[in-house]
Image (cartoon, rainbow, N blue to C red; front, side, top):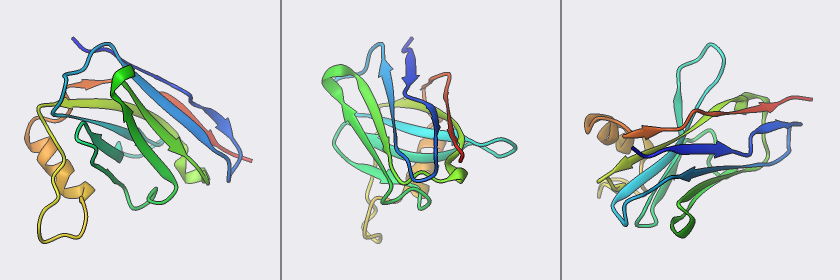
Length: 140
């Protein structure tokens, strides 16, 4: 059973930055995908960004250019660098892991598409493990 522990949440003003981290108790050597999801009050959970052990990543349009996802495989840690934060980024942020799954770039698309990869991920049963979440509040 893999345990995921998120950290780095907090409250900042609009335009500020935060760095979220998610440390796994264990991870496979390769062929896994990790991701950040968030759920705002009264809304459904949504994917923010995904990254895989092969170095690929993809982002939601709402955070593209502002957030950066990265995996430190040696430390079994997933990071999310969040800049230019907006009030609409307020949510509980969850870390998740899917083993035996890598992101795909479909040939008819110019880049790795988050939506299609989410469909693939959900079609294969969704993430194997979830963290408990960390609250991020953007407010002046």
